Amino acid sequence: MDIGMWIGIAFAHHVRELILNTESVAQKWSFKLPRSLFNSQTLETLVLTGWVLVEVPSQARLKSLKTLHLYSVEYKDDATVVNLLSGCPKLEDLVVQRGLGLVDVEIFSIVVPSLQRLTIYDDNDWQGFGGYVIKAPSLKYLEIRWMHGLQLCLIEDAPELVEAKIINVSNVVSENNLGSLTSAKRLSLDLSPLEITFPTGLIFCRLVYLELLTCRAEWWNLLVPMLNASPKLQVLKLIGQSWSEAEKDGVEWSQAKNVPECLLLHLETFVWKGCEQLLEEEKEVAKYILRNSNRLKKAIFSTEGYEGTNFDQEMVKELESVVRASNSCQLVFK
Image 1: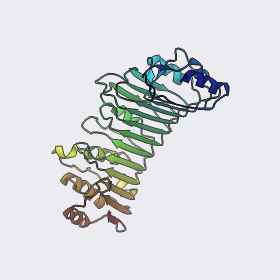
Image 2: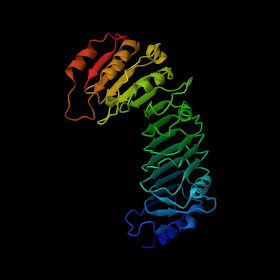
Image 3: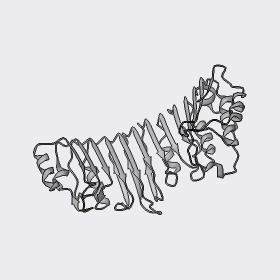
Image 4: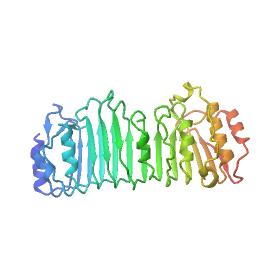
């Protein structure tokens, strides 16, 4: 099949959306996109998946492109990424998924002033080199997952950020990157407090929803500074995993010297998912929140994610016996 010919026919008809999946092509890495694709004046959505070589020797001219999804494609070099993205003045939604073995670009630079949504999945083990630089001042939604062994991941200020999900990337998320997320209203984190130092004075002034995964050793030592730094927090959700590093660690929970403002004035919902049996330190975390959250309306402990399991009944009795700061708080086990 002559894929290039079909692309040419599509552009002759001023196509607005192109979805190309070449994962089934027998000769991997054999298909190179025609340069005419990167000079379309009408294309608004471009989705490329698998076994495609992207080479953009000079700046692209995709003046109408708003959505660009790149799944396991091969880039000729670092300059190709720069030339492609700099030629998309209206780009709003970018997805980059890089599979195992795709180490073609060392520094993946995402400099797009118009970008509003960015999703990055990277399965590679970079072993100490390579990285991402993100400069997107209009960004509203950010999701980054599965970065292992990168040298850097630099996120510049995102003053319009609404929601961010940073999952399993502790080894490249720095204190500066946390500072770039302070405008977010909703935040999901899977980070190890052993690999980052929480910046002094950091404030998440708009944060109302916080989700933390509890699989990392000493995860509770990230919870405390996050509560202190989130004065308007209304919803706190903790998520257990079927695997966990936490039980391998002997460090005890150390509660904050002063009760965080969010617990005193704003927290209304506390959810702990996947908590059929908690460590002693984790039970102390739950008790602390129940004892100090003056406006808490509902505390939900759930075994969701652990099919066929039941709560430790001693743990249930222990939590039910806690004197709650909020008389109207409903305690739910499901």
